[in-house]
Length: 419
Ligand code: PMT
Image (cartoon, rainbow, N blue to C red; front, side, top):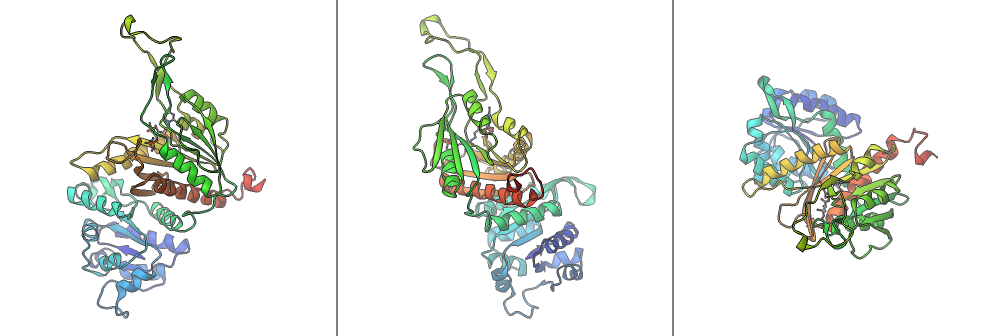
């Protein structure tokens, strides 16, 4: 189902409809009363070869919202206005669109579009946070030209991004979810590196390795051949080969030696700096406070991404501290922004971001809360869950990328599949 709300971006929903149909979807368009003031229903019915539903009351079906809700594999709402977002978050069903959203168990992809002031209003920020927490998928909005000549955040995601995100959501519930990874090779890093100062002291961090081990275990459970490059000493998951390392340099060497793997997941917390020199004997207190000069460590993730071969899936993690007690919803948006920036800076396919300042999230806990972003603008929010559940979502996203790789590289004679 394609839901179209009353905003000027409704004209772009026409292109979304066409692209969904071209991609092989059977599209049932639903328009709000406001939407019909911007675009005529005949446009959507002609493109979708399906009548457009606009009302709870005028349809041939006695109960159109349950009919639509039960039959949909996916509901895409583009544009999703502040009103629709507010009603959906509050559970209000005042028209066919909102009633259908409450009457469905299908995944929902919201594509918000509105003026910047509305998008940043605390009510909208809170409503979006509520919907994301409930597992609603979101693509956009982008930043750019808005109605009336204004510029800012709130522009509807581009139709191709929306269709890519729709495909990703559908595949995550199908091809990606629990998909077998038989024949896939993977390297996963885990734990916090330790950079020695002297024979007894080191610079380190709080990573326990639990999240990286959970990802390695999930990849192996699905049939992948997994090497875990570990700076931690947890129990080795069944079927996983472990290479123990301590420093960033050792981790770099171990990953680089295996950088041809189909999948590389950098869940380790790698030191960004190390002492330029390691004292050969214990630094003595009686000699006074030492001055410790630091130098940067190699950026392992950026290195493997720069040397990547076609078809590889490279996944980075990002430990950020963005949460604030007053604006938890705004924190999540800030996390998404930082995640997208880091995804681009490191040149990776997927970036898993966790706000490690939030309770129960990140270092040492048995739980985590992440969002997974990809270069096409798709985003999966994983609410607070066990690290095993988070690992399943990460591996689903990887499986999805691998499935895409098989179709997009089938004609490339250099790919493994064709050798
Ligand atoms: O181990 P746990 O206690 O279970 O905690 C899990 C976790 C919080 C460690 C994990 O979820 C996580 O966020 N891991 C990444 C931590 C981190 O180093 O984030 P970063 O934003 O500083 O680095 C970004 C990415 O670059 C990471 O994939 C990191 O592995 C990689 N990196 C960083 C520095 C460096 N020199 N080389 C790298 O490859």
